[in-house]
Amino acid sequence: MPNRHSLFWRLVVLVAGFCLSMIWASGYVSRYIDRASSFLSEQARDTLTSYAHEAKVALQTGPAAMAQWLIVMKEREPGWLVVVDQQLQPLGGQTLSDEERQRLTFVRHFDWPMSRRYDGLPLVSVPLESTGAKLIIQLPERFRPWRNHALLTAGGVYLPLVLLSLLFCWLLYRMLVSPLDRLRRQANALRGNRLDSLLPPSIARRNDELGELGRSLEYLTQRLRDSVAQQQQLLRDLSHELRTPLSRLRVACESELSAGDMRNRTEREINSMQQLVDHTLEFAWLDSEQPRFECEPVDVAALWDLLCENACFEAGWPRERIQAQIPEGCQVLGNLNALAQAMENILRNAIRYSPAHGVVCLTVARDGDSWRLRIQDQGPGVPEAKLAVIFRPFARLSAARPGGDGFGLGLAIARSMVVMQGGAIWAENGASGLRMIIRLRSV
Image (cartoon, rainbow, N blue to C red):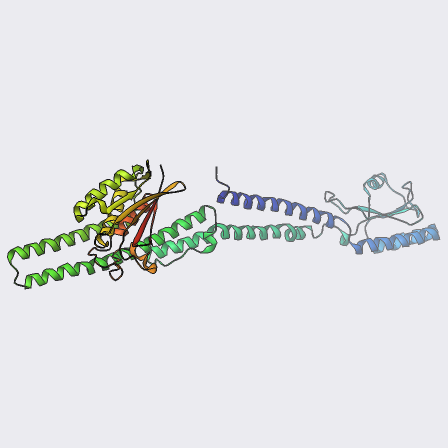
């Protein structure tokens, strides 16, 4: 069943409203036209009333005047007419045949609506005031009602229906075709490598399927734009970083180094370039694929002990210089390998930038339904304006944190690893040194 924001319900309302409006408008206007066109016109009623007044005067004058008036009326109105009393007896010397008497049963008052089912001209009666007599006359052709019924129906019934249909098509176009056309133009812009197109606000605010499609297309546009920009930046940075070891190799080749020194230099530079390429490929893979790591309970204390053992062996530090304050039973929901790599990169950075006899400390504290892991060194820290920059690839703030020989990819990879686990990572300056904070869900 479509949800309440689905386009289906809008179409139901639109189509049902259009059909009901058509039915109501056509029925109302048709009934109004039938009612209005079935009555005699004002001119016809005035003329018939004047005939009745003349008949009244002739009746009051005498039978001879009535007979004379009937003769005159035969010349003025060639149709059938008669003046009768209350018992439908003819006056003025007229006589009626049985057929004509039968016709008197179909007489209609001149103020009543006329029926369309009658084929010929109807007989109408006009009362003679204060006499009880009636003038019964076959309605003259020029006074026939329903004369303009077809024209009025066409203009009053069919034309509004056409206009309602145009309104319905316009609303349907505005609801469906117009946003689809905008989405088509944005898709064509993507096909033409124009990645700067933005979703119109009118589509972004929609809660139906078209709005969802537009936001998905906009997300793909931004994702593709960011990916292309990231790849271009990675290529520029990688080419720049490779120039340094290649330049040193060229200088070594041109110098008079011994075979052993040349081999050591070559091996060191090749290892450096290999590490650079591996880190760059790993970061590019994380950025392009955006994998979702399978999360499981991870014991923070056990993981930290393992990382400290490896870090102390690599850096030659005594174990006492890496401390921890971890609550008992602290477990986070994460991916063991990804979290280990992220924390290892942060720990290596902390060791690299620590002063002589410096200490690196991990403290863990509750944060609602999450844990905050704070890794703090005693180095020079980072300017406040640069705290977000250090997570960018190839970002090395040597002026702020001297002594490093990395490539500026460790924190960028760590950030991607943490985010892929549904966590967050940021940096802040502590009382002494830099504090890296990882927030992950608690088990």
